[in-house]
Amino acid sequence: MKKFLVVSAFVLASTSAMAATTAAPAQPAQGGFTGPSAVPAITTVNQAKEANDDAVVELTGYITTSLGDEDYMFKDSTGEIKVEIDHKDWNGVNATPTTKLVIRGEVDKDWSERTIDVNKVALAGK
Image 1 (cartoon, helix red, strand yellow):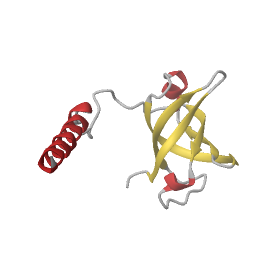
Image 2 (cartoon, rainbow, N blue to C red):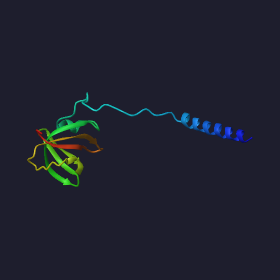
Image 3 (cartoon, rainbow, N blue to C red):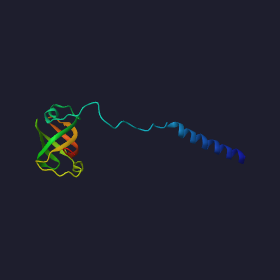
Image 4 (cartoon, rainbow, N blue to C red):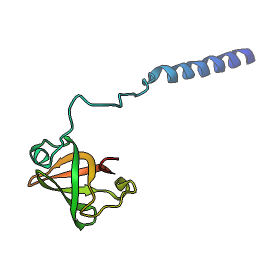
C-alpha cells in the first residue's frame, strides 16, 4: 500500500509538471532590423507641414524661439514649424538662434497643426 501511494504521488506530480509545460508553448524571441529605411526622411520644413502623422524627418536649420516648457520654433530656408524637444533629447547640445542644428524625429499631426516630436538634436556638420 505504501508503494502504491508513493507511485501514485510520483505519477500525479509528473502529470502536473507535463501539463504545465505543454499548456503554454514557448514564444519565439523578438528581433528586428536596425538600419537604413527604404522610406527617405523628410528634409524640409515645407515638406513636414504636408506630411502624414509619424513621418520621419531630418531637418537642418535653426531654433529661433523658445515657446516655453519643451516647445520651440524651428526654421529652415523653406519655412518655420513648432518642435517639441524633451530635455534628454538635447544630447548635451547648447544652442542659440545662430547655431545650425540637425533635428531628427517624427511629424505629430494634430487636428489643427503639425509639429515635430524631436528624438535627437545634433550640431550641423558633426
